[in-house]
Image (tube, rainbow, N blue to C red; front, side, top):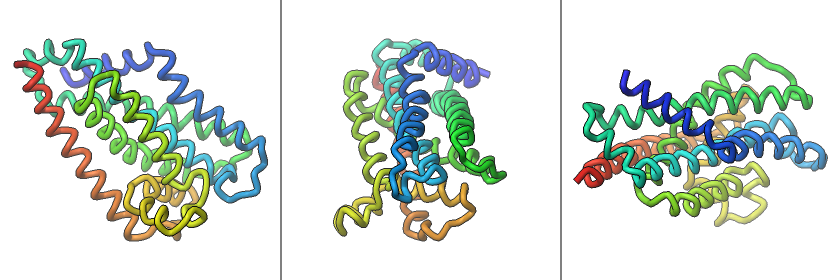
Length: 243
């Protein structure tokens, strides 16, 4: 019950900030719309391919605002006051994740509704795509918790912006990695964002030819490591901040 109450509080904090809603939902929808008006003759920008890209792009802002929320809670002594309650660190982590999963679900529904209005063919595969993307979003939320535990509220903007840029340029949402060079392609394979995009696109299209074993291994490693690090570091911060 305490975890659910904490999740409700986090969700209210997110929707109370109109700027966060603009970046998390309005900006991705705007980009989805505006890039389709350009009629760019590239596979990446076709509506059925760019919609999954926009979903992933929205997740990068989820990371940014998760980090800001966690760092803000720390600097405002909110977590210090909660530290006197019988809540466990896992309750805090699940509280953050649950509240942001609601935002992710709203994001996905609005993104697909916009894409369908713009001409995306409705398919039953949209439902599993939303479910898969919500699992992937847990990685981005955990990354935000990790960043928010590492730095102050002022520092989250810089690190969050780096994540946004990494998603844009290493996932393949704007251009194929092979068009840049072999070194850049290796960097993309070492990071999890290309794997995330290929998983979402593969689920939507029922076609996983672009998803390799390397992608799966890289994503699983990052997923587990980031979640574990976020839990460990958040717990240590809770202990140190309460001293």
